[in-house]
Amino acid sequence: MFDKELAEEDVQGSLAHVTMLGKQGILPADDVEKIKDGLHRVLQRIKRDDIEFSIGDEDIHMNIEKTLIDDVGTVGGKLHTGRSRNDQVATDMHLWLRKRVVEFVDMLHKLQTALVEQAKANTDTIVPGYTHLQRAQPILFAHHLMAYVSMFGRDIERLQDSYKRINVLPLGAGALAGTTFPIDRHFVASQLKFDSVYENSLDAVSDRDFILEFLSHASIIMMHLSRLSEELILWSSTEFRFVELDDAFCTGSSIMPQKKNPDVPELVRGKTGRVYGNLVGLLTVLKSLPLAYNKDMQEDKEGMFDTVKTLQGALQLFAPMIATMKVNKEQMRQAVNQDFSNATDIADFLVGKGLPFRQAHEVIGKTVLYCIEQNKYLLDLTLDEFKQFSSLFDDRIYAVLQPEQVVNARNVYGGTAKPQVEDAI
Image 1 (spheres, helix red, strand yellow):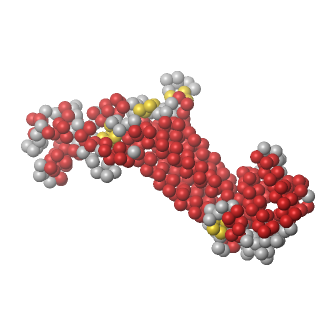
Image 2 (image 1 turned 30 degrees about the vertical axis):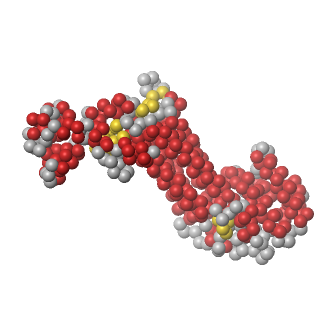
Image 3 (image 1 turned 180 degrees about the vertical axis):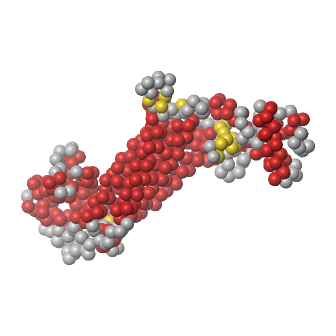
């Protein structure tokens, strides 16, 4: 019975509801106390995993109500006064999801911390920066890592913003139209620490936007994790050898003992599609549902539970994987020295001498082509060789083309220069 995930939240909501029924004089004080005592005992049994939930009792709400009645007698049947399972289940999901969102914000902070610590250790590590997976310009490895810190920062902001729409109370909407009992919805909201209540009873029981929003945000988080996974997989390959992942996050091959497979990044990359599927699945369920509650909406839970479980697993592994990752600084530096990613700085040098950029761009192309034909890199050329392509070249070109100079020349806000990256850290 998959909705037993909501068991604790169901009791939590019921405690607030019955307290309100007593406050409003809808139930006698003695009945309220008996029900509350019984609910507390049920909650303790849930925490001990001491209740055998049965599909024969239909759902988690009826299972808990039956357990309560078995404990306190027929008075337990009064608990459901003034509410419906429609607003009850919606409340349970709001309670359940808001707790997970807070947990995910904390987990993302831990991942950011691991990335920042690696960045601190690599403010002098230069690596090729890529576009189109082709070497483009040298950057600090710390700068690359801090890009993911920014991505996960946006993920945190989205989750924090979504909390406003999760933390709204649907209880009191009844089946769809409210209730004839003189309930106090705002009191229940304060008991459960909801910031507000749904203004429309139809919307309260029909709304699953808060779940869709979470599934969307989770999909974006998984997309970010998948992008980083792909880079870790590339960087740890024999072709790159930029990083080495700890053995705890890898496995060996069953027949090729020389291999070290980056299992965790690959699994996270693979599970991203699963999370996307849960989002599209619920969007499809809801796309043509009339108001208010429909049985189709029982499909709202399994995808939410699965996404939470998948995202928890990914984030729990990612922070320690980043923290224990070894960075091969020398291999990164060698890669920078053996490419033409500093070529753009020739253009800036020549433009500074008064040559129009388009002409400078043409000079670069001819110079790089010459290097390829001669099996050389730019810093291998003599000044006479440079002057074949423009008389504007002088000895300063060698300083301009040094990787450290190329990196630190980009000293603009958000750039890869060391002062900018240290400020970002």
